[in-house]
Image 1 (cartoon, rainbow, N blue to C red):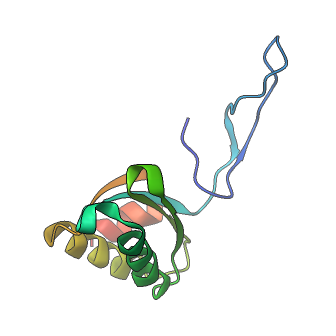
Image 2 (image 1 turned 30 degrees about the vertical axis):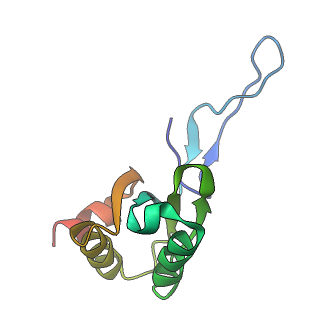
Length: 113
């Protein structure tokens, strides 16, 4: 199951009392994009520069040191086309590789424009 930030999920306990994410009860309108930062081997400075670039577009996120990754949380009210252009530019320049982890219909619609 994939869910973006702010999605509500059910988590019924297993017979041994462990809670695991179940079905999405209320989907988020946010999209989650994962980046493997290639520049400077995904160093802390490189990950922070990626976060800073997207913060200028009102996109938040967090760095994952162990894997040299950044996870972006893209809210629905930002200019999705601008975010996608920056993502595509970074891939073309080999600053990062990307994966659309959990995307919305609005994200897909912006991608086809």
